[in-house]
Image (cartoon, rainbow, N blue to C red; front, side, top):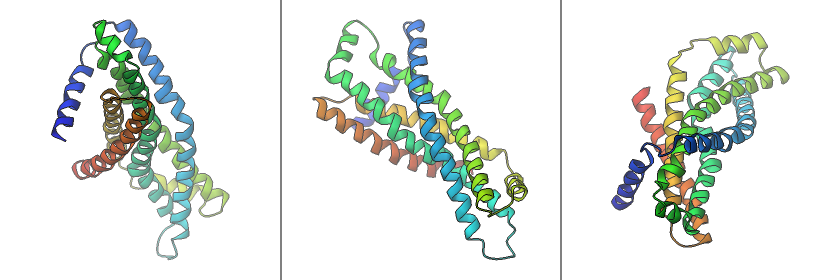
Length: 243
């Protein structure tokens, strides 16, 4: 465990060095924006809308006391989506989608000796392969989570209105009730840290593997499992610190 942590820290030192050729870095960064960000928008949008709809339905169906105001539906959906569902659940989804791709991509380059070839040519392979992915995730994931928050709230609105659970005005009033802007800041701080975990852990698992194609699959699975556990752990730690 200590040995793996040491290797991880040494790899991160290599990753965060200044790129040798900025033109190559920017080209790689644009590619990673497409792969990590744009290609993830569809699944994030679908999950967010249905997540918000289900949250609204569950809250509305469980309000069985006339003493509880109906604006509680909008308020509860907003708090659950912003504080937990969007930053944490969507990050777990991205850990599976993006993390497995990063681990398998870098792992394939390792077992086919492409990384060794880069190092032979004097290229900082860790910086070349992982840094563009890291920067892309740190910049694009907050945008994905912000989109997820908006679509989750819209999904809740659609469910409430279409199923006649709560009126449009009451739901919107609930969304606006007791709003604290720090909730958004808290969610985005978690998102950035989760993005770092996804890319760094997945890249590390792909970078250090030895063997063949079977080991690439194992590294991909290991990356997703480790990333998911770390996201849940840091979610608890950050919630204690920030809230």
